Length: 146
Image 1 (tube, rainbow, N blue to C red):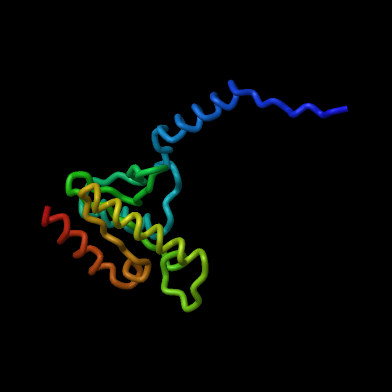
Image 2: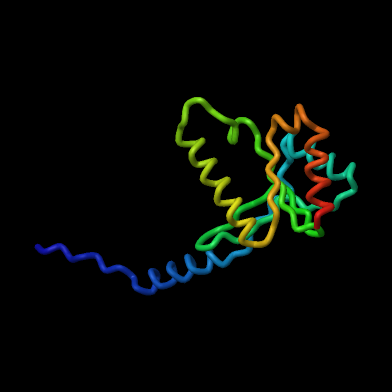
């Protein structure tokens, strides 16, 4: 007559909560094998030309959850480099959700880099394509400061 209320398994719930806690402590995923975009390849070629050692796809721990990845890290100089493509980071006339989220992510990365003691260089697609020498000078100036 009466339907029994289904009992939930306390043991399974406890194990699930433990797995969730452990997943937040995992090390960052290795994104170095991810292929570079054309813009990232140009910056990598520039860094190689300047004989500056760098590491790609460097994670910084974000408080609360997860990691934020930066395109290049110059450990010897305390500099992070982000390459901003026109599609995601360009100035759009019409504001939409994806452009707002890209701006929020950029601000988060700026704050996180500063919090961890890094100088962050943002290089826009237009600069890479049209003002190659200025980008070169920008990188050299910051590297020589350190």
